[in-house]
Amino acid sequence: MAEFRNPNQAGAGSGGTQDNKSLILMMIVMLGVFFGLQYYRQKTNVPLANPATTTAPQNVGQSAAQRTVETPSAAAVASAAQPQTTPAIQAAAETTTVVENELYKIVFSNRGGQVTSWTLKKQKDADGKPLDLVHQQAAKAFGYPLSLFTYDPATTGTVNSAMYVASATGALSTPGSVSFHYAANGLDVTKTFSFDETYIIHADVLVTRNGVPVRALISWPGGFGDQDNAIAYNSAQFDTMRDTKEDHLAPKKITNGDTLNGPFEWVGVSDMYFAAVFLPDSPATATVATLSNQIDVAKTIKKTGFSSNTDKPVMVPIVGTALGDTSGHTTARIYAGPKLVNVLRGIHPTGSKASLEPLLDFGFFGPIGKYLFLALQSIHSFITLNWSGSWGWAIVILTIAINLLILPLRVKTMQSGLKMQRIQPQMDAIKAKYAKYKVTDPKRNEMNAEIMQLQKDHGVNMFGGCIPTLIQMPLLFAFFGMLPKVVELRHASWFWLPDLTSADPYHILPIIMIVSQFLVQFYTPSPGVDPQQQKMMAFMMPAFSGYMTWNYASGLALYWSVGNLIGIAQQAVMNRTSLGREMREIAAKRARRKAGNPPTIQGRK
Image (cartoon, rainbow, N blue to C red; front, side):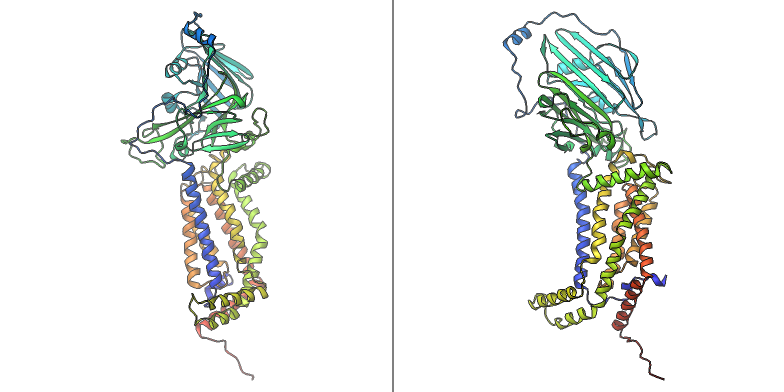
């Protein structure tokens, strides 16, 4: 391994102040970005509620500034004052209607004309069974999907508990439709749902009282069935698009029962991997209610991220929404399914070229993360799909491709480092000339000017050694924001890793990460850096990378570890080149001078 010794371990002289500053600056930037991302995630994802907090009541009030006041005509008022006698329409017993295609299996109950189970056939739950999108505990507390939300608690209770007459029971194939009808005491409710071979269904809802439309909104009030741990609950958000501009709100920013009036291209709720989105047929007259509640999951939640003491309540946020129309007659498409980029990109609001793709929110480095994922998806589709079908191998191949692209920059970095080493004696002489002046002395500015002019004359870029790192940092943090949020990698396994979006259960990759990061610091030349700083960085960077990957998505640790191993191999090869040998020779000479052992001059024979 002698050929691969770090040139700086042999001694770096007393200079290097400018590069030391740039190295420290680079570290500060990296730490700033990392903790900034953590702060961003905390800002956009509400922390768990205090266990002592009680479940919020179902407030059905509206914000006065946002409410549209309906002013019925005099005839309508008169009609409402004199209840009409209408034939009662209601079922005698509870029945179910099952709608099924290749993507889902939806079970409707005629009690409330709502969904009791919404199973996604191509998605699995934590037990490996097809995932039910309905959060059963939350649904029992706050309502089932496609139930109705009105601004009168009594009316809401009636329409969601009444026994509707279903147009079809039992199994129903797609394409097709099913209707639910209920009428009693002047209240008349009709709900019609149409289905095809996609994740999209269409809803048509009309509620009247004595012939006057009642503003009843169709809702998804109770979160999602995949919410079985802390991360899943904290990733819940309320999503909207107005005038092609999307917005995402964390639970703490949502008021239960607040009303927002259109226009809306789409509105919905989502967690990290799944979404329920309403796309109104008439965006301009759409009206939306925000729903936010809490439930105690102490006895049902996985203990990942929660206290293991089930004797105390563990309150988590449940985010929902409801969509209606100011006319009282609601018609809309509904998407309920995984946040698959290829699927979301193909779903467009009424009269707009926008899509549901903005539901994928990758954070601050989102634009970079988006293109990284598209590259990862392309590799998986065209290379690994016919080979192994593993997303893990797709990450490995993408990492290799990225490192090959930045290889020329690594060579440029070594060339810049060699130039720095060649002029280091002259830089030391300049610093020695000004050593008698204090750091605050204006004469020090003349020293810095001379050093900069010397570097300029010899074509030395003081930041040349940072370029590969500065390029890889945005990629790293883009992976940091993207990998845990793509449903395609959910439950995607690779060797001992059961899920690339979850932490390595055995911490094998983080350990490889720490060791490889140390070797990267050890073998990579850093001309002009003080040996003590070099040693500090050799331990600081591995600790930093280990902290980031220990309990984070194993896909990130895989990307980072493979990149480090490639970097070590590349550096080993470059250290054997004439460029690397010259750098070692210069470093060795400087080390001998610093130690006071000048080279022996042999006399002539």
